[in-house]
Length: 133
Image 1 (tube, rainbow, N blue to C red):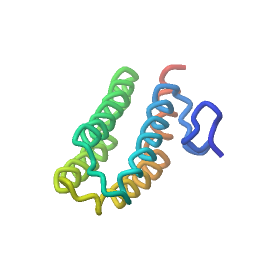
Image 2: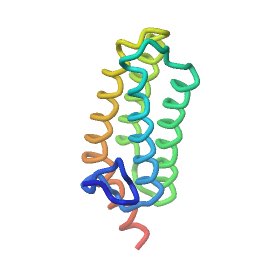
Image 3: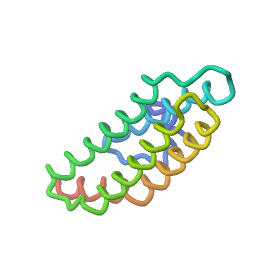
Image 4: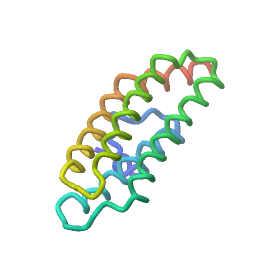
């Protein structure tokens, strides 16, 4: 069940770092809105593709800044971010006006994010919180 504050973010994915949880929720909301382009004839506007990519970049920068401010080693975590950015960038660029791969990309990013939060972000949040206390 999602928190009332974060409608698209299940409780088990909450890091309890408000900026991180807010950005995770915004990404899930944006991905949900992307689905309107999956089954229609309307092309995906380039601005929407750019926004998705920039949201990911911005979120990853937020996490990097938090890690560096707390003195937490972020290298392995950052490598995971760079890998997914590469996949997303290549996929978005290959799509052009073909929407057939969009649903697969949305599912991939959603799944990747859930697994990434469980594997990396929850531990990251705990480390950042421990350093602050």
